[in-house]
Structures are given as C-alpha cells and as structure tokens.
Image 1 (spheres, rainbow, N blue to C red):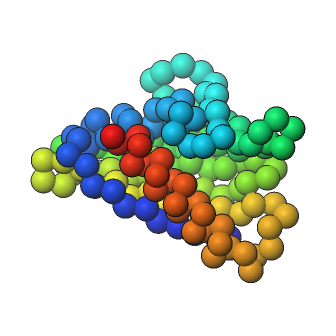
Image 2: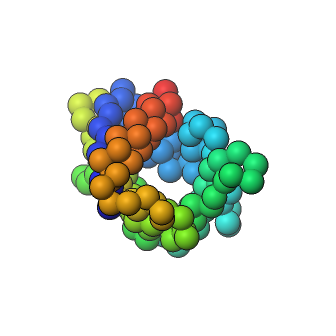
Length: 143
C-alpha cells in the first residue's frame, strides 16, 4: 500500500479548520477531475458515506468512503476523523487530525491506499502523486 502524510499550519481556529476539511462536497471543488456526493445531510459524523468520482467521462471511477471515527476538536483535545475507502478501485484509509497550535491550527492528513491494477513496486510513485494532490487540496480547503 502507498502511504503518505501531509502537514499544514493555518491561522484558522481548530474548529474552523475542522469544518473546512470535513466539508466533503468542497473536496470535489479543489481536487482536480473529482466530484463528491454525500448520502445524508449535515451535520455529518460517524457513519456518513460519501463518494468521490474521479476521471473524465467513461474513464472514471468511484471512491466510496465511510466515516468511522468522528471526533471534532475541543479545547482540551485534538480533532480526528478516520475514513475507510470501500471501493473496487481504491481501498485503504485516511485520517485527518486538527491540533491547536498557538492561535491557529496544525493539520495532519495521513492516508494509506491501494489502487487496483497498480503493482506494489509503484507504491512510492502513487504516494508522491497522492501527497502532492492532497497537499494542494488541504492548502485550498484551508485558504
């Protein structure tokens, strides 16, 4: 599996950083060639299922995910969200942590993924591409 980690700092409060990072529909606005649909309605939390559809036309795939841990930040603890990827093309997990840092927040985004049909020896390339893509997404979501 390909593993990557992205860290960002922001002047946003932990609560606002959390809100922006867990606004699943907005991910579809900042990740290239991706649209996101969420089943259910806000407020989202544990058990929420959403699907990122990536690609163009017939060359596209669904990446369904389920929120299995939902712990928004509080004054005395950091926030953590864990997603499990349940697709036929992409499997794995992602974790988003939001920590208080001074007057702002520090975000840690970790993900481990496997892409069906991509051999294991390509994991370092998959990790670099995913790190770049989701690093840009995190920056845009926090802007």
